[in-house]
Image (cartoon, rainbow, N blue to C red):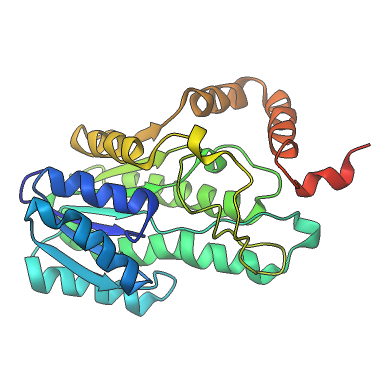
Length: 272
């Protein structure tokens, strides 16, 4: 990946920041995009030791114009795009019956439409470079998670969108990777939205027991290099996807039990 131009959305923290470090370590030129300029500067400082070209573009991927600007600035600076990693995303935690519908709209705007906008404007350059577009989804994009309706819906949508883009480009050389990390230690649960759209502020899970963002980024990097079409991380994630094909009712019950055991789970209201 030396001298390749890599755009990473959601690069201000978590998996996005770890991806920036991973590609900078491999001597790629890195474009960092996220809403928070200060956090983006922190990422830039973290990869400064690798002495690679870095472009910082503050952007809210839920806004089409910001996504267009991100691609245009990348082209005006580097002249090409080799890899686009659609990593920006937010989560939620609430039962659908309690949920303000604006929460689902917000998740779809960021997670799904952000991926669509960035991919749309980057696609001509990626095709020309025979490059790679990556969508970061979740096991929730293969199996619905109770209490995460908007999150699962957005991840399913990304998977369907990018798999179709892959098929449309079978003869162009464009590589499409859909990556499902599973539970990864990051800030996504701290910033998850609650039923009324407010930020959760805490995590219901033991972050220290999860896969690290650095390891996740390394595996995604390898999948890009090897031009894999899909990546499902963690043994639990692979097992869930396999079992869901064979025993879907069983997986429904297992998913319910898993999410019910979370501290202050919204599912506890149904417990006898």
